[in-house]
Image (cartoon, rainbow, N blue to C red; front, side, top):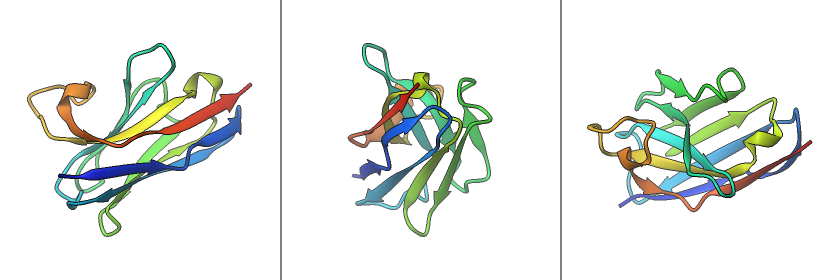
Length: 125
């Protein structure tokens, strides 16, 4: 079992930056691909980004490409999401998750087994 805790969310003005962290306990993250998702009010949870086990390969939703950067530190058992040039439409609860099901697309929730409680990001215009 893996327990994930996200942090780093908050209120920021449009154009600002935040760095989200996802800390794990229970098991090492170093054997899992990791993802970030977000859920805005009244909307379904959507894929944001994914990082490979080594951190070498990364994937992004088109809506955040060029503005967000995912990274990981396996020694610290943590994953990060650097968010720059934030927009009001980035407002959501952000979740990190462990990918476990590789028969499903990595952009779908069903590919992930363990989720944190989320951290709120609010971007004001």
